[in-house]
Image (cartoon, rainbow, N blue to C red; front, side, top):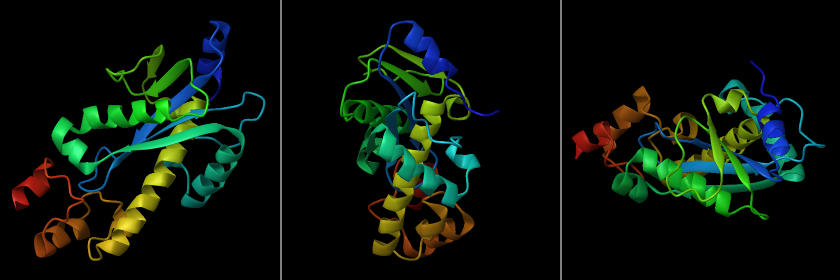
Length: 201
């Protein structure tokens, strides 16, 4: 499956002018924020090779990140570890999505949202698309922007808290991360509501 522009075209036919693809990354990790991106592509200037960020190499993601930034309206937003622990991960990821939409230079009038649930605080018309990052080019672009951005955040946190392997596991519960959690204990960037971290406390 290669993402195309058909969902966006359908929204354009319905009279919407600025269609944003929205996706988040970082629901599963034990540490770090959850990050969302909203991207409004220019239908006349869509970067080549857009796909679900998980299917792309790091190099391809970086190239596309640079190309998307150059031609699209992009907004990236986070929900913090504190917000994740307070709200729960689903609500926090939806909060990040709404923030990303609010951060666009020019407000979108329609959103294509990856997944099967609309954020409850959304104030514009929207459509959910299951596996949207592999089906809609706008959502693919958003998945790439969110992934590259969150990876940068985790690299920076890895330098402040060495030993957990965040520069390679990005906060996911890899074997080395779990061992470090046992030996070093949790950091302020660990999600205390997540079971493996909660158990350590």
